[in-house]
Image 1 (cartoon, rainbow, N blue to C red):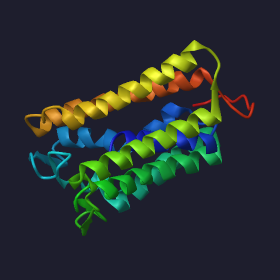
Image 2: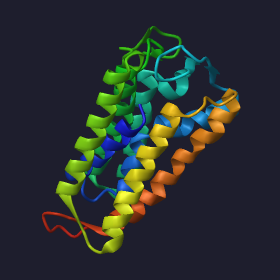
Image 3: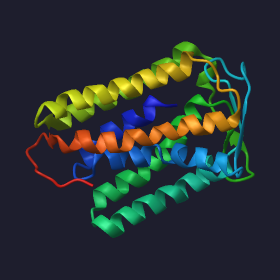
Image 4: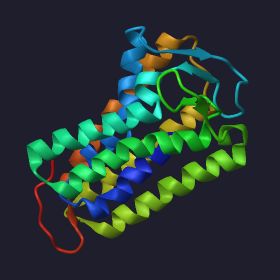
Length: 223
């Protein structure tokens, strides 16, 4: 899943208004942010295998540190704990921890049975990537609901808050479409390097959020 993770982060802003959208993006995409680093370090592994699912040509056969359920829970506790230690904002810390774990849950829905429950443990997955209608519907609905929740919880303070938001959402959408319909990368290293592009969403989310105000009138400093 790609834009679905961002959709969940957008929606959670309503329940953690003092937490920046960039920080929420960081938590929602945390597993995919560390994954390419682990690939480049040869700690985890993936194969480019066209046809392995209808929507994605990747065989995620070895990623127990970044994408097992147990480690996702531990990563979530770590991310939420560090945030709480720095900010002392309980709602934000809980939101961030849950967002990290939500990544595994959403991936479980779309992946084939390649999601480990724990390092070296059983692998599970509902396999929605084997159906174009089902896979696309889940992504678009999750993304769309998240956008609606975020826009309902915030209002633009200036033009940046309007056009910055929509340009960011368009970038995410077209990036996802490019992955879906573009050519597969030639090897796992190329995949890892291109995946590092996810990091651009973090400062963009922070920047957009700085130009929007929580809709109930609460003026908050976000981080």
